[in-house]
Amino acid sequence: MENDLKHLTIREWAEDDRPREKMIRKGAQSLSDVELLAILIAIGNKDESAVELARRIMRECQDNINELAQLSINDLCKRFKGIGTAKAITIVAALELGKRRNTADIFERKKITGSIDLFNLFEPILIDLLQEEFWIGFLNGANKVLEIRRLTQGGTNKTIVDIPLLLKLALENSAQAIVVAHNHPSGQNRPSDEDIQVTRKIKSGCEAIGIRFLDHIIIARGQYYSFSDENKI
Figure 1 (cartoon, one colour):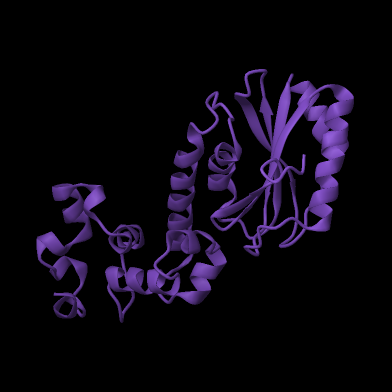
Figure 2 (cartoon, helix red, strand yellow):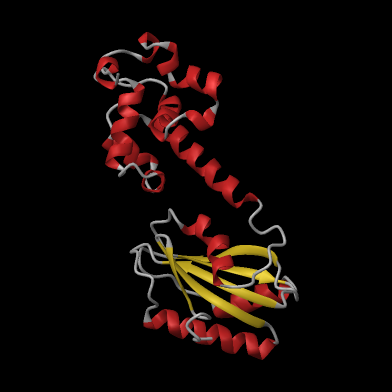
């Protein structure tokens, strides 16, 4: 069927093969990633239908939505014929909405009981980033999350952590405990010497102001390192 459809526009396809009609008849969950992307693209180019273009984009992203989400508007426009600024904005906006949906309720008084809870809390936020970011979570006395906030943003392999600011924010938010997390875009989930030093400084600062420091995790492409699990706190 795929070869038969190759040179047809979406409007010329059988109704069951058109992404929009398929969504109406069978629901969004019945569509593949390629078909969903084709709906966002809407119109292909002179050589490809929207579905063919979507298929090529996904193939170049290893058929991985997370790889697609790492592409900027400029990347999409430059790499894929038929993707202009408007289409690229639509794709990026849709992916951002999906990401926000995943994180919308993520800190609704979520209780932190271990490192996996922290991974689930921060990984949706940090997964697609091409630069390092350092985040802090403020907890109450029952280790439930009050708020999470980005503290700093850096380059591809380094971010500067302002320890006094971190402690000031913890006090302002009436936190009784804190957790911190940052990402390694390289995929290396082991801590650097600087990561170790920063963790020690945060622990020392928290002890000085009477706030519990529960953990620091490093997230790297689906994996993570927990200072607490490794008895480094």
